[in-house]
Amino acid sequence: MPEHPLLLPAVSLREGEVVVVRGNAYEPVEDADGKPFAIDEFVEVFLKDFKALIVFDIDGLDGRGAQFEAITSLDRAAPEVWWDSGARDDVDVVNVITAGADRAVVSTRTLDGFGPLKRALELSENIAFEIVEKGGRVVASSHEFLGKRPGDIAKGAEQRGVGEFVLIDAGRPLGAPVDWASAREVAAHAQAVFVGGGIDLAGAKALAAPPGVPLKGILVDLISVLSAYL
Image 1 (cartoon, rainbow, N blue to C red):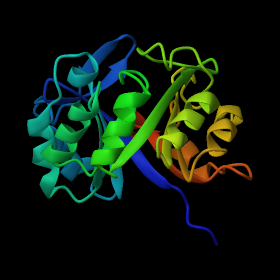
Image 2: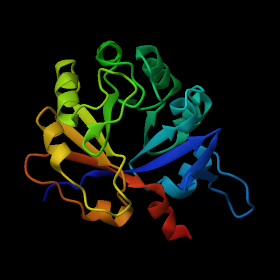
Image 3: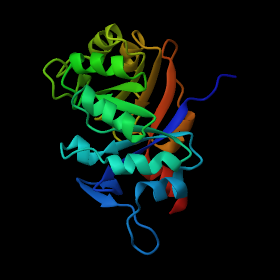
């Protein structure tokens, strides 16, 4: 029987605190005493049974600088750590790896184009390229990526040496079925595909990819992971 795809809880970190999104606001995850969790404590309490997790560094994504101390604090954590710091260029990517992340996640949301991606791949193999889409079009800050189909971006990334892709549907409501159309586009240029956006823990455990999509992992909504503790 084939191995089930890797489950990666998707953790958001803002100003050193683990947060969840409710409505249009960030709310810190607090312990029994009302104290917000630092990420190393949070992982030890809630996520130590997972093999990997992905962290969305809100400070970095908002252009306020990556939280390198938080990355370093996870050196003692058992799970493999993937980190999206909002990298703009290859220097940002290398800094995340140097700080201790197992994998730097490089996203269309913030990267300045294929040039920095190619340079980053020349400096480190520990990179996953993240394509964020909404309505079938890529969400990006670079004109090289903006508004294109995920398959077009995947083709260009493959030509620069990318093998692993993270595909996030930013428009999918929590619990809604996965539309595999974009994943099929990306799969034509991928050795491995990770999917995310609106996938809860129960849905992730039951998810099966169609033929031709080399699904290696699933990003899991954090609130659904925490529901077992509430």
